[in-house]
Amino acid sequence: MEANVGSADRVVRVVVGLALLGLLFVLNGNARWLGLIGVVPLATAAFRVCPLYRLVGLSTCPLAAKK
Image (cartoon, rainbow, N blue to C red; front, side, top):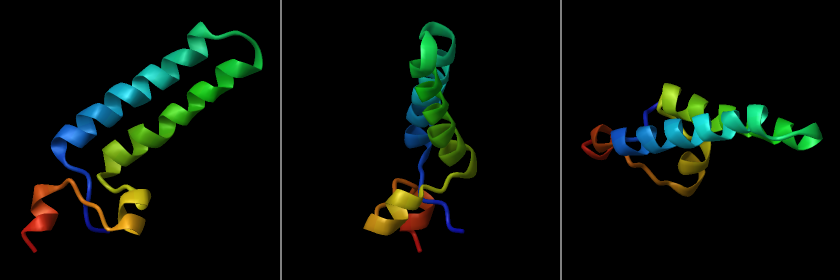
């Protein structure tokens, strides 16, 4: 798959993903499992591919724009 997530976007996704995962340790009860949503931005940052960006035809990756 072609990369569509740029460097600045990756940094934001890692920060947001880690913050969401931190909810696992902060919240109590069943609400704490909402922190697992943080896996999604971390995965998209790691693989540099965002399926939602692909659906709407968006790309923040400068390498993909050169093609």
